[in-house]
Length: 86
Image (cartoon, rainbow, N blue to C red; front, side, top):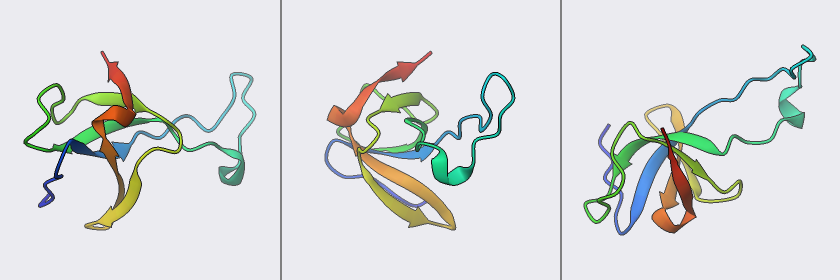
């Protein structure tokens, strides 16, 4: 991918969460919340604590959604990222 975030930003692809409850009830798309996890796809040169491939947790309404090469991504500032999932 040819996208280089600027400033203290990263490019993240949302990780889709399961669309059924633990009891097997299917949740329709319009009732699901947007996932608050994602995989880091690109990192600004100013960000040293994150790397491509890291799975991060971020705020529900954080970032700006962009479409690149047929996919939807989020551009997030590092202050909107709560942590890395190990």
